Every structure is written in C-alpha cells, then in structure tokens.
Image (cartoon, rainbow, N blue to C red):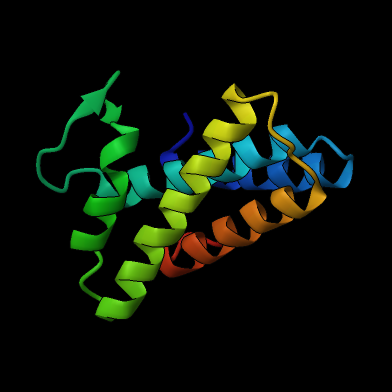
Length: 125
C-alpha cells in the first residue's frame, strides 16, 4: 500500500518525465500533485481541516502548511504558502484553461516550485 510520501515521489518523477518529453500541461499538473501529496503527508493527523474524499481540501492547504511548519522561520513558512498557491494556480490553468499558453518555461517554473516545497517539507528524496 502506498503512502502520501510515496505518491509525492511518484508524482515528482512523473513531472520530470513529462517535462523531458514536452508534455508541459501534464508536467505542471504532476508537479502540483507532488506538492499536494507531500502536504497531505505532513498534515495527516494534525487537527481538523475541511476534507474532500477524506483528503485535505486543496483550498486550505496553504494556510495549514503555514500554521503547521513551526520548525521553519516565518519567512520560510510564508514562502512555502506563496509557492504552493502559485503552483496550484498553474495547475488549474494547465488542467482547465486550454486557451492559456503552457510552455516549457511554465512547466520548469512549476517543477522548481514543487522541488522547493518538497525540500522545505522534508519530503524531497
């Protein structure tokens, strides 16, 4: 049985593979889901938050990350929150707004944001 951390690592690898093969929209999506799974891993068992299908709701992840990362400086917590929000917006654009451009630069930025988030959460392996 896979854990949230396993799913984070799998999505991270998929994001890189999709980036390497020029499937930029899908790469952005997998970058986001790697960060989401890492956040779910970190947040499991930490208080009560809105859940969708038993998982943390996407909209609340940034604030819950910020409030549950006490080991990081305030500036780092705010940066994780901001980066996660930017990555979420990129994923929504990639998945639901086909009329918007999604090129290599956007996918690279999403992957970089994801890498930084996973590193800060201690989930980059």
